[in-house]
Image (tube, rainbow, N blue to C red; front, side, top):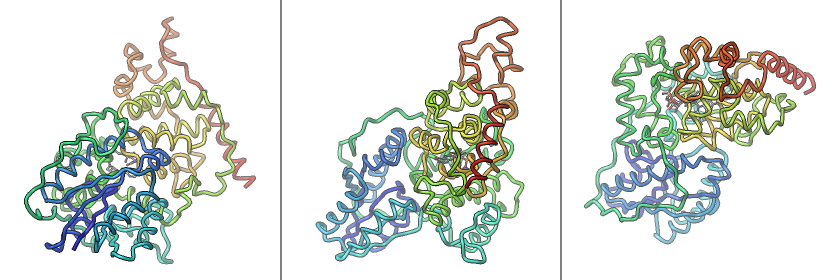
Amino acid sequence: ACHIVWFRNDLRVTDNKALSSACADPEANVLAVFTATPEQWRAHDLSPRQITFIHQNLLELRHSLAQLAIPLICHTVSDFTQAAQWVLDFAQQQQADHVFFNRQYELNEQQRDQWLINQSTSFHVHAFDDALLLPPTSVTNQKGEMYQVYTPFRRAFITQLVTTDYHSAPAPQARGEKLTVPAVSTLFDYDFVDIAPHFPAGEHAARQQLRQFCRLKVKNYSQHRDIPSIDGTSQLSPYLAIGVLSPRQCLNRLLAENPHVFDSPDSGAFTWLNELIWREFYHHLLVAFPRLCRHQPFIEWTRYIQWNNSKEQLKAWQEGQTGYPIVDAAMRQLNTTGWMHNRLRMITASFLVKDLLIDWRLGEQYFMQRLIDGSLAANNGGWQWSASTGTDAQPWFRIFNPTTQGKKFDPQGEFIRQWLPELQAVPDKYIHSPHEWAESNQLKLNYPKPIVDHKQARLNTLEAFEASKRDS
Ligand code: FAD
């Protein structure tokens, strides 16, 4: 028998349901395939860093699969339609009996998979829920509907989770002599970019980082997670986003170090689990409300907001030249590394939408084009939360003050100085309003003055939201 495993967002051999199932029959000839889809990636705004990271992890995956005597065939097409067609043709050519894959929950991805299922007359398709702790549509309220508020979702989620089998499976056994890995070190053509040494490729490195985090950092997570100058979060998002690590592996490691996590709501471990459940929440929402995959706001009336179309202000935000140090430092972190601290994602998103009154979709897109951990569910969820257009979002009349946020979460400007060398000499007291200091000392800073006045901007935004709500 021939079994084909179609790898997509699950670039690992451990705890991979599709791979494990394909390997369950010891006699089967197992082939792994991956389809690179550069046009589709462009249409989905995948960042060059994430594409490079996918490639690096594919090389690692090819190596791990070779140890199991499973070859990885990587084929380049332009988009999802062609990818599904190629898998169909390949399966027929190989006279495959079974094709295995793990589900992806975004709209285009689901359509692609459905097409293959409909066309598969000569083989069986086996699709698995692998990317989340609990599959979408499985956690519902008493009416059988998806929750629209996070806290009751989490409560129901945990109740269900503890009665579910969430063990993580080991890698399948080797199926024969290990294969020699071909010398070619490029699996698809792309203008690859440099990636921060922070994110070494491969599931081994990811698991190591997970282990370290759960052993050393998770206990302080509640106190440290909001301080960008502290390396207090797991930084596992790039691995989770492309499935080099599974959420079950995260949960099991967390439980190994903190067996009572479910009963310790005040612990760092629980706070971290809570973030993993936000990840689930946003994925479940995508499936329950497919309009979220179509650039539409969750809250209908926010569609009518009259956005500010200023290209210069958008550019200043993108480049980290707004004159608000915490915002600018954060944007430079994103531009330089492809990763941004969660607190800063909230601050920069709020600034774009509520201080500049620029359409959140432009911010969402810019993030996606830069992030190494880009994920439609989490990115869209985070943006719609910040923009007050989403489910259980920040209420629209609550507007972060970027200066106060900076003072609160980077009091001495440690993080700011790391990214804004032009503010090196500014004393701590003025690091969040450097021009005040410069002016009183008659110095000239090589740093822009605030591009908007926060107080005024706040009033304008409140008015724009109110008008849209009233007129809808
Ligand atoms: P940790 O604090 O260690 O959390 C562990 C894991 O939980 C993360 O790796 C991530 O997978 C998940 N997680 C944590 N917070 C959230 C959250 N709020 N929503 C969903 N999942 C979460 N996360 C992405 O993975 N991809 C994105 O494209 C993305 N875009 C965002 C955009 C905005 C505007 C905002 C406000 C948040 C966004 N997030 C996104 C969520 C969050 O900022 C990152 O997951 C987190 O900063 C990653 O760092 P970490 O791995 O150290 O997280």
